[in-house]
Length: 332
Image: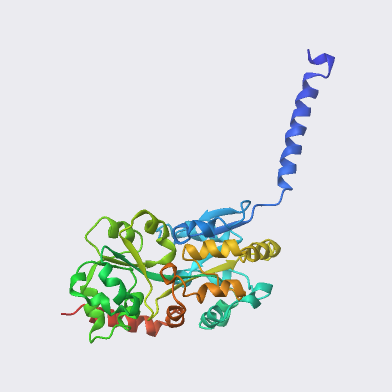
């Protein structure tokens, strides 16, 4: 049968050449851009903006398998990280990003926060989002008005043992410092039902808890599903969670710039803000998201933004001091 066209050996050789040609063609295709992302911290509206032809590599800084995280980051072009995990990465593994043109388009809030980092860190961090913490109140409408004004309402007797706090002594201490009461940290901790970062909203919905303090970007879907929940941003201000992008390679600068610029599309800005993600860029339309008081229930008021606070990296001395303050508040 083969003799009509070629010998069997010639046919097999032809097949081998075809396979080699295919493999060579694939090797010449550009590699996919890889971005390492801690999935649970990002709303769907933000993850959906990442180009479809990029490969999202999942990382988890809380994972005991830290080496796996390091390998993923080292093999990714870009990494997304929030300010709480900045000290978990080796800045020596990343490139400077000050050459990117959009650095000049950062707003004052993000530039001020960048200024709190040392020069090496600052040159490699691109702020890409800021998320305000919010107070979620369940079935206690009478608490809403006092919560809109200050954090003092957290010491209400009816909330004893019914508040879910973030699992961060630094955030809790910063809130305690806003409360007008002596021994505010000790009193605040006595109000806690539990401290949790992963399942706080599930606990709120399915327990006797009345209040949870959570990043705004993590709660939008729950607000739609459960009419018992109300969203409050005290005019006294709220803690802010910052998200940064770091680059391992300068080979994909043009691709990165195209993605960052696409985020300023007005429909994307609206969608991100509706899910608690605010872009730290200086465009007029975007900055209006920080200033609108028409619907304060949908996000922080301008006054709340002005009074909100961020968390620079702690020095060793500051870490020791924070630990001592926290431990002292545990004593009877």
